[in-house]
Length: 145
Image (cartoon, rainbow, N blue to C red; front, side):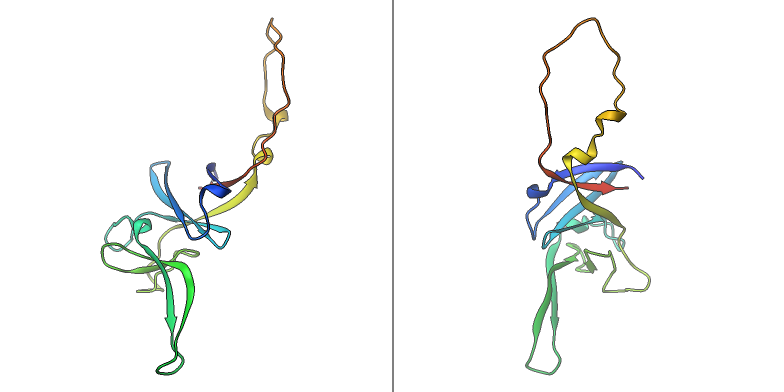
């Protein structure tokens, strides 16, 4: 699988999303309470840009007159036909057995783990330059496709 650095961790605040294009695919990256999830930005029902839809949750009611709002920000609603999908798994709530949207693994990695200087092969040239130590101190959202 190929790894792609798609954002710094602080670039997508909790409750927000970023839509990117990788390898010809439009993908939405979501931050749900500090965890990152990625789904294809294409509704399997009608081809709509799914990740541009409304993020919501569920209303649950054990008895009439009592209700609770759960899973806030974990359900994406298709902007065209209002089909709902779980951002964490891609599962459809309209037809959970047959319909789902493709999900991808998104995780946080430290910048220094993304580049291994020992793996970089350099050819020694005739000139010498003054060098400085450089380090990466941010965490990055990495998507594997």
